[in-house]
Image (tube, rainbow, N blue to C red; front, side):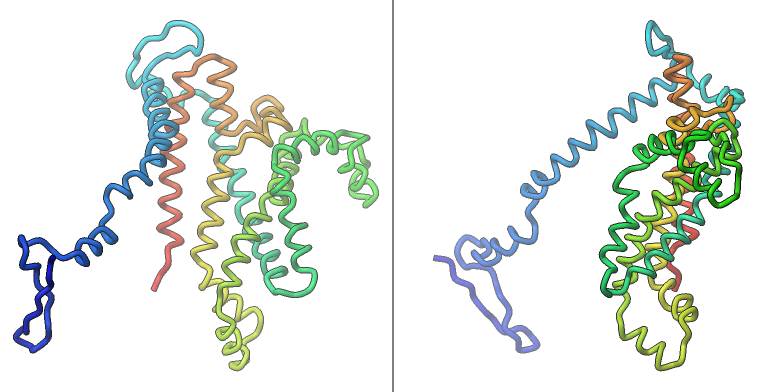
Length: 321
């Protein structure tokens, strides 16, 4: 039977020593070690996640990197061509135009999504009567999904019969026969309005959750000091939810750079290639022109750019003391 001996240290406090039997630690020490250092249990619990990432993320990424070094035609034989796909990356005028158009689209929608989401979050953050219903109504377009909304807009944007033209004609803004989807500037405007309306609900939920985490005592102190609503929002609320604002902007920018569904459904990149985004250009290169190797090289470049933009945003919007 193991015993735990105690002895007086130089400071006069009792210390726990090793068992006198076999020099092994006592039962309490073994139990404490098993609770604080469970290597086998941790490995078993983490293994499924590691396996999932390895099979569905790392392996496809490595295979895609290999494809980008070939002239893979999607169907038929292929050969290794090294960095040729990367060397000719910007010689495709459609891809170059798609980069500029995607950046323009990102610049147009990012700030309105944040501004509208912030306004809606301020509107529904208080726990007053009817706020739950408003949250549901504002978040509903995001739940429905951008793909479904795009198919609905195809019907509602038709000349002479769509609801968009009917409303504008009723407001006496147009004559009600505007062909929205065959004109690049008008199609871009319509898509931007759709995206801002559909996505701002997510921004609202993120910002509202962060706003509700601000202690009420801070607002009470600001009211006692005579701060106005605008001063409270600018000097208290916004600084305290800065990290959530940064997260919302990053999600919005990444989603805009990867925009595909709404453009593919509404304009198919037309007229011509005027509304072709980067992902649209990659899709056409790989599955229409059957140049999967070149399309994969463009995809790898897009992943690198998105990673760089995300790192820059984290740095620019980081918390400051």
